[in-house]
Amino acid sequence: MGLVTPAIGLVFWMLVTFTLLLVILKKFAWKPILSSIKEREETIENALSMAEKAKEDMARLQGENQALLAEARQERDSMMREAKEIKEKIISDAKGMADEEAKKLIARANDEINKQKFAAMEELKKEVASFSVQIAEKLVAAKLEDNAAQQALIANHLSDLTKNPSATA
Amino acid sequence: MSFVKISLLTMLATFFAVAASANTENEHVAVAEQTSEVKHESTAGNVGEADKHDDSHKKSGKFDAGKMILEHIADAHDWHLWGEGHNTVSISLPVIIYTSSKGITIFSSSKFEHGHAAFDGFRLDEEGHIVWVDKTNLDKIYDISLTKNVVAMLIAVLTLCILIITMANSYVKRKGKAPKGIHNLIEPLILMIRDDVARPSIGQKTDKFMPLLLTVFFFIFINNIFGLIPIFPGGANVTGNIAVTMVLAVVIFLTVNLNGNKYYWKHIFMPDVPVWMYIIIIPIEILGVILKPFVLMLRLFANITAGHIIILGFFSLIFIFGAMNPAGGIGVSPLSVAFTVLMGLLEMLVAFLQAFVFTLLSAIYIGMAVEEHHH
Image (tube, rainbow over all chains, first blue to last red; front, side):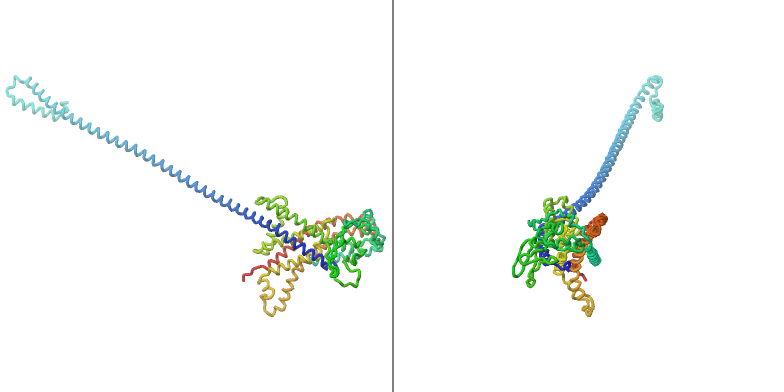
């Protein structure tokens, strides 16, 4: 049967052609093609993993920024609060000091007034005494011989006066 | 599947042989008349030699479908284009013969005048083989002519080389860029062979066998497709020729067995069975080693040849019915053409499928030979 008997000529040419085809295509086609495909696949894979990494970095940076922002905000808040406290403290301190100063001044003024009042009183007392003596002298100069008895009487009256300053004022 | 196809092939061939012999009594209405205007010419420049043909050719007006189909799927020393008898238009191909007595002889096949003349002591026998005119000469003839199948194969291979190498060059030119143009035609096939055929079967050593698998796939694929083109330079039954598929199978056989590792050989000669079973197992394993490429050879051959026979068979129906009655021929032709178109589409699928199957099984056999076992 001719159909299933391999012809020697065709076997020969097939062997030659196929071997040449294999060698030529291997050298000039399959090697560059396969290596290009592999290279491209690696490039794509690298690009993808780099994109993934960039995305992660971005997320991380964003998170960091957020944290930083929150921290800054907190710091600002605390600074504001501190400033407010300091302000209040200064104001209150100033107020207290002023009060104290005023109190001191008032106290000093009171003292002074008291002192002056006392001095005035003493002087007044003396004046009144001398006035009284003079008045009394004028009144009773003629009538009274016994000077000493008169003096004692007046002194008694005067001490009554000092005991009741409102009456004299 | 291949056995089904072989039996189908045989049945069809028988059917047409019977149908054709039944027609020999009828008066011919034949193809020869339809093509009578066509001048006999040949590229080898032997115009006008048609006159020398003897009268026996006139009998060939009667249509013999079986003979026609077998002639079409067989190899030949000239490439028949169209016409019958005196009106044959064919391309004469060079004949190259080696004999120990004469050495290498080269001449055009037109010298044989389609089997009617002898040249240099050689002549063509009925089957188209070159034999000695002198029957007593027992010197062996090695016919390494550039026959129809050789030339068709060379044309297909050249086309393939141009296509693939153009693609490869544009890879280098467009390095690092997205694929474009011809890339998109070939690259999916290359990736399919690599990712779906080679890697699952072979695994780590895939890269080593990729060039062979790709060459085998594209060689079979392009020759299958060229075989489906009805006019020159297609139509030759290259991958449906047992010599071609045999060489492919031998290449796979050698690749598998030369790369077989110790596990592969241990599996054949020292399988994990009781020693007394070696008597049965070892012959079976050795048979398996030979049978695998043998089946590869037969499957491709049978599938492609069967496809050609079916398509030619449908066409022959026109002339078989036409020989009975011209109206019959005209009546059956739309049906016949419709079936042929259908078969043509199916054969395009088969062209791809058989290339794929051959490559897949080769990859699996190679994978079995290089697989590392971890017990």
